[in-house]
Image (cartoon, rainbow, N blue to C red; front, side, top):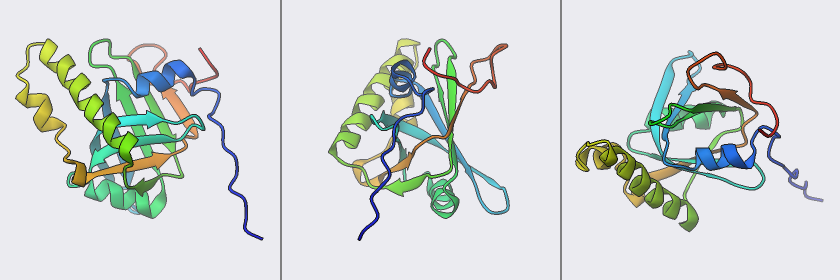
Length: 169
C-alpha cells in the first residue's frame, strides 16, 4: 500500500498578513550553503504562499546556479523579504527546500511581481531600466525554490530584530 503524503498546514506564525507581505513588491534574497558552509545567494523575483504553508520563491536559474545546487543537496534555505520603503523585514528558514519548475500561476506571479517592484523603484526616481535589469528572468530561465518554512524571524531594524515569529499578529 502506498504511503499517504502527510497533510500539512501553515505554521501559526505564517498568518495572512505575513503571507501577503511575502507576496508583495518587496525585495527578496535567498541564502543557502554547501557542505563546507560556503554561502550561496541570489535574488528572488516573486513568491507565492499556498494555503498549506508551502512557500514558492522564484529565481533566475542562470543567476542561482550555486544556490540551486546547494538547495538540491541539503534542502536548507533562508529567505529574507524586505520592504524597500518601510524596511519591514521578515526571514523564513526551511530544511525541506527543493528546486521545481514553475506552473502557469507561478509565471503570472513573477510577471506581476516584476511590474509592481519595478513601479516602486521607479517611483523613487530610478530609471525603469534598473529594476528590469535586476529582476530579468525570462520564463525559460525561471525556477522555484519550494519549501515549508519551519522558522520565521522578525528582521526589521530595531529592538525586535532577530526575534522568532509567533502566532498570528
